[in-house]
Image (cartoon, rainbow, N blue to C red):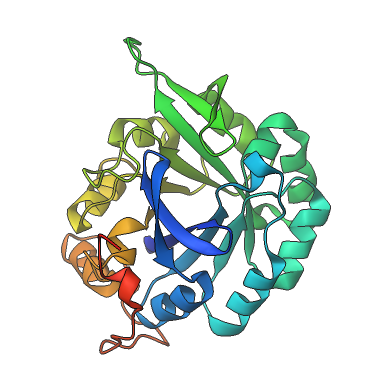
Length: 277
């Protein structure tokens, strides 16, 4: 059976607001996460990802209230990450309405957290997020993993870490290229290909989406099972269902029927459609 490819909208959340930047810096406001989640549900997105991008760095917990309010507003799967350090944190997010939890810095600090989470909640609930940069001057095309919202180099090889995460029970890998993130020039297909070739679980491509063509490349050439974007959706450059239709025309299996899709939905907040906001 051929699985459909997914289009995922990502919300980088900072102090309760959605923000977006370039290579993890120069952040600008994009709106209220719960409000945007409901809009994206109506626009046909397959899944949502909420990442509290400063939680690990600042030692704050993910806002449970945001998760609960989102669960009340949307009827599609969503993942929550940021500040999740224990299986108690995982349980809290899942019981509050999240379908999956994403762990990054905490998993790097204590890889056993992956195994513990998978054993308690199932591998399908555990997403390991990997933020990586290409190693300059490395002829083998190596990639180094970063932690704490891309602030700290770890010395770990991204491919080896992805393999270990899956061996420990991760059901999905969320791979972000810090080199391409926010630039809208396309995903890092070589990095993506290196990871998808190394692990048997779904890999979400993140960092660099500028149009539907980039998403097609990530799936067809990079082997991604899902493509994630933020800026092009938040600031109105692309509509989700238009992207999915283009991917389908390119021959990729897509879910074009959506129970809550509203093709006439135009109730986006002003800041979502004004790039300079």
